[in-house]
Length: 260
Image (cartoon, rainbow, N blue to C red; front, side, top):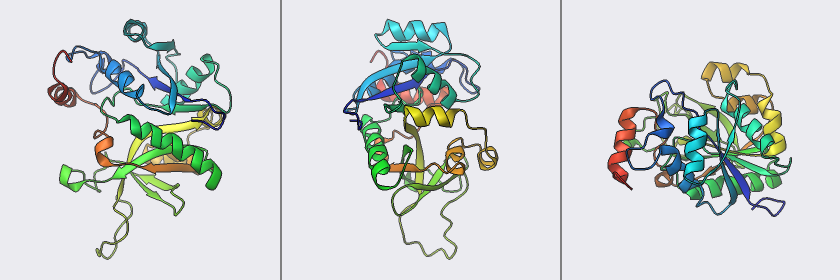
């Protein structure tokens, strides 16, 4: 629950445009559109009182309303997902102190407990570390083929108060002497939680040097002095990330079955 006593609002951005897998949010070989799987999973989070799909395409809007979701149309001209999220929050009339959760529209395997953990991390981080944003991370799993030197896996290192020090596609932390020790490397989970007021501020910040170098939008917050609290969650709760390719979607269909 938020500090105002209300549940948080989750907004799921859902665009049809995708370089590697066009139209993926409406892929329906399981008997449900991919976005419906995400919506149904998100609704199970105990910290939420509202789940909304935000899109710039009438076909997605119609599909969402067809399976009973609340949905809102946004502009197609947004430079990034945060900007789209801010417009959706404004259209929904959310107050400055209300908590907004950004759930990726291509992560149907994300356990709703991860959302709850990230919401709790924001509230805790506001009280103890001056955090303005929260997100989630989990242990990197070499046994599942996750390599710390893989630039497609974003790593995060934390301060003692469990706020983020840095995010990178590079291997961080770097074990100079190879002796191990310390906490295992952490893989970032792309889920963000904000107060509406912070979301509006963040959405209009111009791109920053480190953000442009790493191609990681969350670095814009750190470079502007915002603190990001991090909830460390079990690896099995994260579902292994989003669906970016037709091959990954086929693997999802095989896991959940057709007509499910």
